[in-house]
Length: 234
Ligand SMILES: O=P(O)(O)O[C@H]1O[C@H](CO)[C@@H](O)[C@H]1O
Ligand SMILES: O=c1cc[nH]c(=O)[nH]1
Image (cartoon, rainbow, N blue to C red; front, side, top):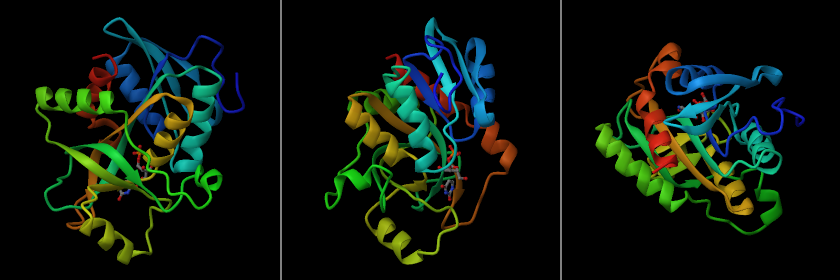
């Protein structure tokens, strides 16, 4: 047990999928894992461990924002030995060619400053995805047939954004979408020598204002989960 995770030693798999939403963790575990067992519910942050095609997998909520993800990813890595961490999250599209329900694989994640920034001080570290996971996820998305985009994303500290000028600059620089956790996940994976990737589904569009309702954000993201599982074990 750790401060925020009640799982006993050995109850967390080496491969962990991390949705922000704990109910998405429950839905994905019940839909995709065999014999899913609830291994954490501290603070309502649900985590399940089961198997997928014979491989042990944990699906655990990360909460919203980099400080929350940082707590769970740190404990999963340091205390439970997680080796492969794949975020399965929702994101807002920032480019016209990226559509609602498309999948985005985050090759790199820009940020104004993650929880890891304090240790880097003046250095702007470039947080990037694990290349093997990235290429495997791209292949999986193509074989599943879901529209997929690979490129830079923005990990924001705010959902209610007051910096339209910043979004404009990010769009000019080809940023595909905005979410709130991937950059910190990539920092932590780099620091601890683990594999990480963010597989994102577009839930809303910053340019068209189109948006999926909350129930669909929880349950309509099956392709993203399949892509993450295929990539983890390819
Ligand atoms: O759907 P999840 O994984 O929570 O991801 C996105 O949704 C939340 C904001 O609504 C943030 O956590 C953002 O990163
Ligand atoms: O962080 C997020 C997640 C989904 N959609 C957004 O606009 N922002």
